[in-house]
Length: 242
Image (cartoon, rainbow, N blue to C red; front, side, top):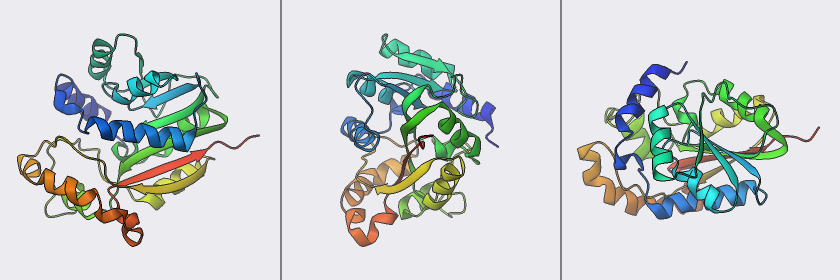
């Protein structure tokens, strides 16, 4: 089970840090481009940004004409989201027990969230519950099959760094995520994505090689034979119509 106390403590400590937004702005926009392409949220449709943090993606989605509500466990990050964007709609909530009625949302974005959950079963069920029939979702998470993600972020690696992550985090395996969301009653597809440029990592050693990582990741795993080793797993799908 996820240790929610440690999750709250970690993000409370990071709530006032600009470094919390780890991606370059063009990468943030690219993720939402993929979300719109994969989920096709209707104009003005209701979107839930689960694990919204300081509201970076919530604001981009809202700026593109959607009715987006951000949900996060950290009240401090939600305060930061509103301070930066007073028009933002955010709600304190646990993705394993969402504070919404059934069939509330047209689309759901799980913002780098699944890999924070040692067992994402309840999150997958809640995603299915709050989606309208025919509604779509997208999740993006670091890929355990990617050599960089494995070496730097998997606890079994001799080069694992705990800096900048919570004890709950670990890279995901695409098949395991797909199986979990399928078991929740959703139709599920898997994609892989590289070229997401980081602007910050907590480890000083990691920062030294970050430009090299960004450069290699921008092209190496886009080759078709290597795509499943890309840095991120993109899980998409839909809730069946009755």
